[in-house]
Each structure stands twice: as structure tokens, then as C-alpha cells.
Image (tube, rainbow, N blue to C red):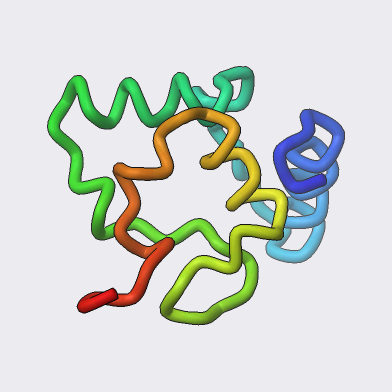
Length: 88
């Protein structure tokens, strides 16, 4: 739910209300699929292996949460060593 336009609009409103200032949350990748984001990261040689997406909070990705499922469905699971422990 934190990737929807509704969530971003409401978050922006909450920030502006809480701080009494004018903030704008910029979301250039909001309409991108996980596959698109990974392709873009690879194109610009960004360190995908140093990112963290899993909702479990564990060192090894759970493979069950929404973020993990999106990575698996993207066909890019092998780009993320976090799916297996080192030495496995």
C-alpha cells in the first residue's frame, strides 16, 4: 500500500500538517515495475547487492513478502544475494 498514489498524497498531507511547512514527496519511480527499477539500477551500475527490500527485517530475504515476490516475479532473483546465506 505504500507504493500507491493515494498513500503518497496522504503522506505528503500528513508531513505538511505535522511540520507546518510545504513538503513535496517526489516519486519518479512510482509507475515502474520492480523489473523496470532493477533494469534501471543495472543500467547505471547501481549496487543492487547492497540494497534491502524484504519486509522480514532478517539478513536473508524471506521470499514470501510482497517485496520478495516482486523480485522473484521480475526474474531478477539471482541479482540479490540476500535470498541465500553466504556459504550456502
